[in-house]
Amino acid sequence: MLEPLEVIGVDNFADSAVVIRVRIKTRPNEQWNVGREYRRRLKKAFDTRHIEIPFPHRSLYVGAACGPLKVEVLGGISVAKV
Image 1 (tube, one colour):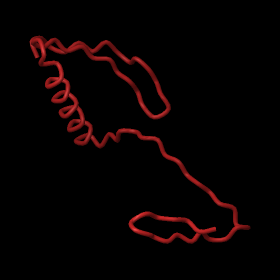
Image 2 (cartoon, one colour; image 1 turned 90 degrees about the horizontal axis):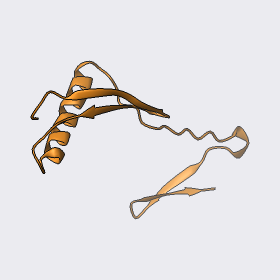
Image 3 (cartoon, one colour; image 1 turned 135 degrees about the horizontal axis):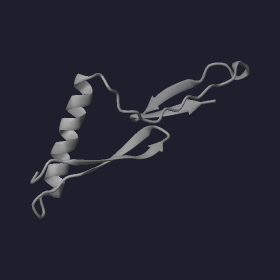
Image 4 (cartoon, helix red, strand yellow; image 1 turned 45 degrees about the horizontal axis):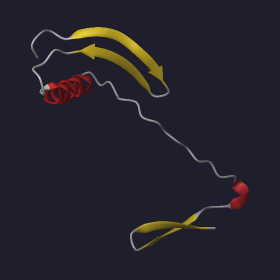
């Protein structure tokens, strides 16, 4: 990093994310390494403060009329039998 990073601000609110735009000045062709290190340190800081990174969840509810779903593993692949 050639200069202190510049926090532009909140760029977007998504379904499971808050996007914050940050600008970091680097040497040519070093932006990818600096970006990875920035994200590593940011994740570590979040973990220290018990801030979870959101990710999409999906729940599937099956009605009581169909009963339990039987699943067999065939060659490492789970197959549902109806």
